[in-house]
Length: 339
Image (tube, rainbow, N blue to C red; front, side, top):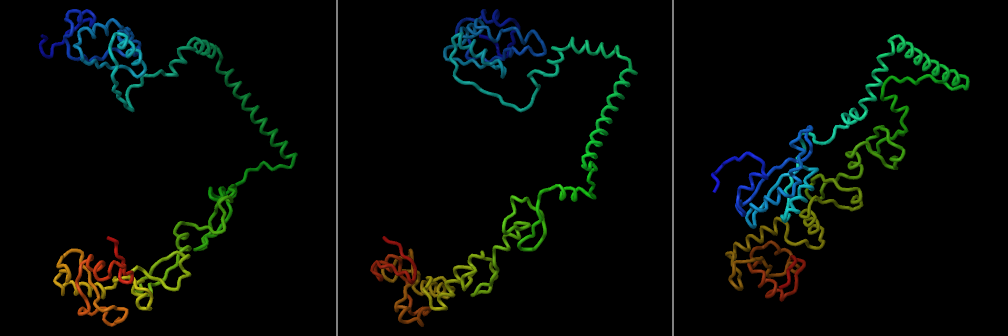
């Protein structure tokens, strides 16, 4: 049995022969990646592709033991083939993905320099032989040729009646307005003048989303409480405006329209008083769950008794719906669910 934390230095093929079969529980190794890193010999020995070395690992490994081996991103597949050829079964792989580190690819500039090294040397030697005065003379000749070509093109344009004078502007804004194809538009709400592409020129255009929303909405006060509300223009055809369902129900009851249920503060206060007067117990079955307030005399026949607590009775939902109303939904006082 090996002592704990013992490091053995040597050739792995020679060292593993000292151990008997089925000796190790697992093997974790990091062989060379075979990149030829910086032209180092230790990274191009071919040991990671040696099938005999992996067979020796399989011999000293116990049955069911695992081998975890690190590999390079461009050469791990060859190492995996060698491990599989040695008799191992490839179960899975663990990838270490990172976005930084030492570049391990090929430097294109150095590769070109190495391929054309002799050619660049010949060019450098040829330039060394040229005298400085000859280089200046060639440069002056070339610049004079460029000026001559510009003068000739300007002369031909002048003869053809084309003005070659550059346009001048006081600012970049004026230059952009002159050279741009954008057309002038005015905001449909505030009247601000701005520029827009011809393809975006519609019937109604606005300078900002705020102007667009303001132009498509109307502001009116609530007919009941006077609260100022903002509605779309499509709703301006209605005669009345309400800020909430509560105000709408109160207005409909005021104008004699269809009842919207017991939503007004008076109805809620009447219900609370009736439940309190009945000690929060059903007058029929004496339960204290799902309690409701029932008008003893119909408010259609006696509208003046709508908020009279003497005209109220505390009952549960089952007795109210199935007992008093015989299972018929009373839509004027609210909506009842079926059993």
